[in-house]
View 1: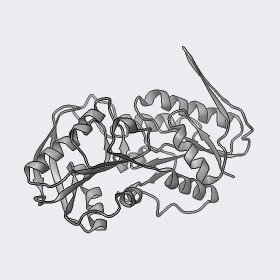
View 2: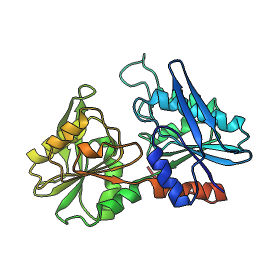
View 3: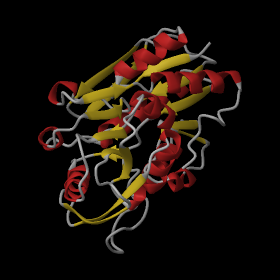
Length: 310
């Protein structure tokens, strides 16, 4: 039987996965003290196949340490194998020394941290750069949310266009456009600061079309705002739809996105989302995807059709 443990980052998602799998979450205590965190597993898990659900949203440091502590407790309790289910992996955007030589490669640091502990395998969803998978010595199951987001979009007006808000999202946008049988448009952007983005030009025709903007994540909302401004200047019509895997929303993001007057904002629950602050937000659950992957891994079956094709 699958043995499921919920970390403190997203117990709601872990509970959904448990319901789908028809199992109970392992009883566990997380006690926080000023100078320590105590993890205690309150049930026997000797010989168990453990799946530990713990995304690492901002601020990721505490959730990362908690993940390592729970994995350590599981290993010391005699678990046969510990699989970390981390639908959003913090620091995964830092996959190279961008902006100069004297910068850290955060994704590699996280890979080293996870590899140094008692985690045997990692499951994650839509890494910002697929190459990050190669930073890990352990097996990585890199899943994709594309089918879930495509299904959640449902029937879209035929006078629509799929939009990549920057060139990094072009391949993903092309897949959506092919499945929806719609034209694809790419916005060229320049990032001035962490929160300031300008769109320089658009490749493709958007005049009179409704934009469907797709990306792997949204943080401040500045890229979406720049894209919508550029699309409107090019003659796009109607309210924009935005579909992303990870809603890693900064404190100012809900206000920024609310001011854009979006028709729909689709995001998965890879991290907890502020649904009350964004009336246009439609949460797309990753629980079916993750539960399916967990059951297949436990049974020793292939995950080929669930893995990322980016």
